[in-house]
Length: 395
Image (tube, rainbow, N blue to C red; front, side, top):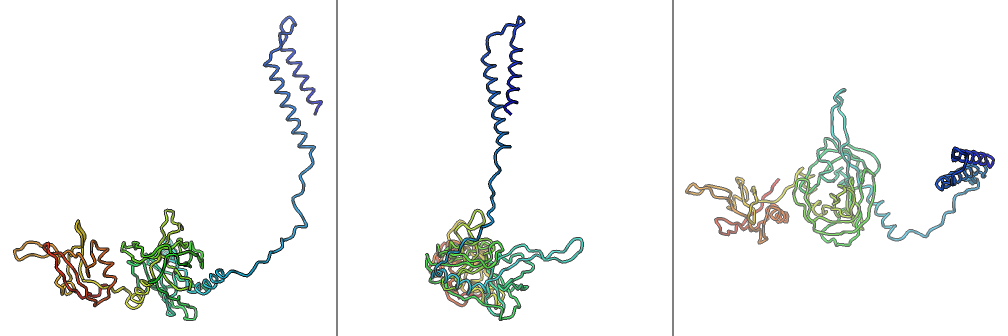
């Protein structure tokens, strides 16, 4: 290698010597630029030669495998903490009551004309009774042609629709599974919940069955809009992780009792952001028996149609014939004795509770049952009137 460098250097010197002589054989003064170029070139050649020598003369890498390698010893730990045992027991007790729901669309193949069931969504639910009733969110089975229920033992059953209440985002399905395979969930109450109370959510986020998350109650008496834009009152806010697929699953207290149905998350990304909502169990426990019994929810009301405007209250646009409103003397649009069109009454209060819009009216009426008697304040011809109304059943 050294010999090669010497030969190259000698050749460069000869060429430089020859190229720099004048026609008379005299050498002109040394050019500093050429000298610098010569030094740089020689330095580069030396570096390249050193790299080549290191590549071929240096010893190979040391071995990376150790044939004597063994597993590390396991460090023993103390017994599980009391909280951990409680969480494990809660999950083992409640998870058999939680189900996985697949929303199916029925389509016909254009070529073979065969009928196919295509999954178009999924969610969670829970067992309500030994009769096979399953409770979930309405939006979980919305637009479904069929629904399949997978139990905790991984058996799958075809479900039938029993009833829906879109205004509370609730639905009831039914499967024909043997009673011994069905473990109904334990029902609690949402009446005395406290902010800061520990809660648990069990469901199937992203299709991962039997997942549990832990959090607290972050807020109470929230109001959210259902899929049909109706107002759901008394909603529970929690920071327990609720993700797509958790919808319809149970929200539990530390005793493993149902206190709400997970229904919605508030998140710009669509994933858990620490703000989830659940329909309170007291609402669920009022709605579900109606759906099982009649397939629909019975509400208390007047038997009227209403509209809103640039005024406080709601205006009556129609009074149903034979309704509670008609019997109480409520008036919709009508003709006066002189033939002039008179606008309907404006409802401004019920039992002295102000009514500024339709949400106010619905919230007040939800507190009453059919055949309850209420006092309705209406504005008629710019004069207030108080009417006594016995509420009727609305479907």
